[in-house]
Amino acid sequence: MGKVYKFIQINIYKGKYLDSLVAFLKQENPDFISMQEVTSGVLNLCDDKKLNIFEYLKRELKMDGKYHVDFEISDGEGVSGNAVFSKYPITDTDVLTLALFQEITLERSYDEDFFRTCPSHLLSATSEIEGRKIHLMSWHGSWTAPPTDTERTIMHATKIADLLKSLEEPYIMGCDSNAVIQGKTIGLINKVSNNLMLNSGVLGTTNTEVHKIAPVTYLIDYVFTSKDIKYIDLEVPQITVSDHLPVIAELSF
Image (cartoon, rainbow, N blue to C red; front, top):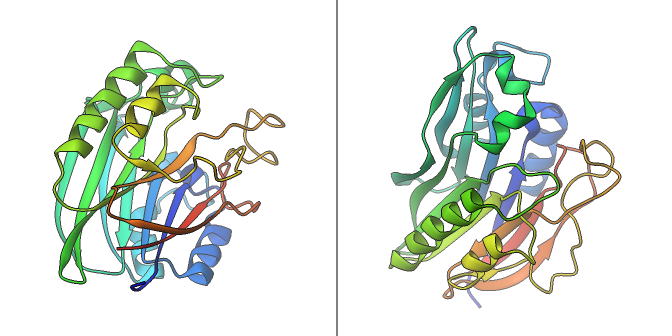
């Protein structure tokens, strides 16, 4: 077996538990990270309402990274989007747009209805490892409560599955999909990828201590890989670094 690489998927909840998140990531020392709800300015849930959380994490973790915005606040300084981090230089990026970027008011950003039609995308960053290119991806799916297949979620999953089928190089995709493993939305991606959560024994990834749907929990956070990446281990620690639990996958090529 070759070198083992660590990939972490985590929706960071706008930096609500930023200090704990950074301490956790430094301790785990991952090779790659996919993140959602990476914010700046007035959208931050940490104390610093001027902080650019993406740039802060790049400095603290000493990793290369790429970021893409979903929406921007029109009546204040702030953005929200997805990020990918890598210990290895990122040589290229690509974005699959699923729902177009918007500029919205801060008040609108707290409206639950907004997240049902929120702008979204899949961010893909390319690193070269062991002489091979690998695509590292982050995706945030449309919010439904409880998690439900909709015309929108199925359309987005179809676009993502088509992209994954087209790739010639290995890939790892982390996501907060807002979709359950038994549904059609995740089923479409399962057809073209290895879903590491299948048969993992993990029953939920929303944090029952702090998530707004607590004490109920749903399995909605995933790590998907191409068929040529070997699964070694997977863990979902019950810790509070977000309103979601981190998914830690160990993999080899």
